[in-house]
Length: 284
Image (cartoon, rainbow, N blue to C red; front, side):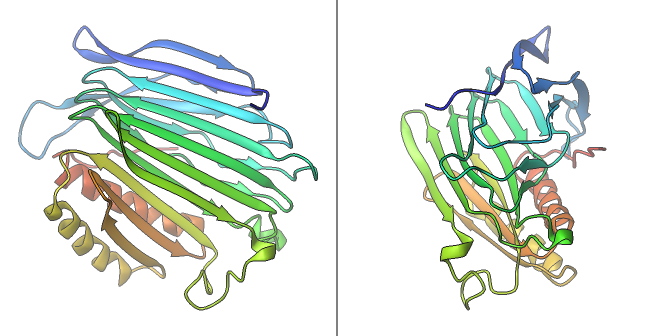
């Protein structure tokens, strides 16, 4: 196990009828900024749903060679949290014998909602990153999680010049493993521009949603939403249901901000169709 060089641990629970941060620990350079509160309007005319907003910060230039970050988040029953970070996650060049790594563990208890929408991941030239995410869901819980992968500092000509990116994700519903992803990209050893691969695209984004409330109609609504976006944006978009209790929306393009725009629209559609909530307007 690599030495931890940055850590965040946070727990959220309902106290006095609202979601509160009941425990936090952070180790430099990672920290939790002050929380803020949303009042989510509903489409049903019901009472606005309370939700807590949380910003994570990295006070360093980013992940250096040998760095290992740990992020652990737990939502107790009924808690509602929107989680994000302050800026891009930057991964610097790695030495030949070591890379950087990050592990995230997200626990969402019964009827809780976690919306985790971080800024994009930027892999510099010669960077090597191993990233692992585990999601644990209880019945009635929902987790929406996004990721955007950049090929490097494109304005400096760094397009697919990183060494390796490994991204693993596991999602558990109770004791059952319902989703597993193991992605590995090595640009120097792969023909990413080949037909059927990345071709002319350079950026990849995913929006994951896991909930036992997901049905075929939610996918139909999402596909109708994406069809409209595809005609307006210069991107490739697709969506599908997973084996169980999950949906993934994937978008590819040449600019991070375009992918973020499309994924935000998809996220807003999920809030409408799955959660009966209006869009959450986040200013950064």
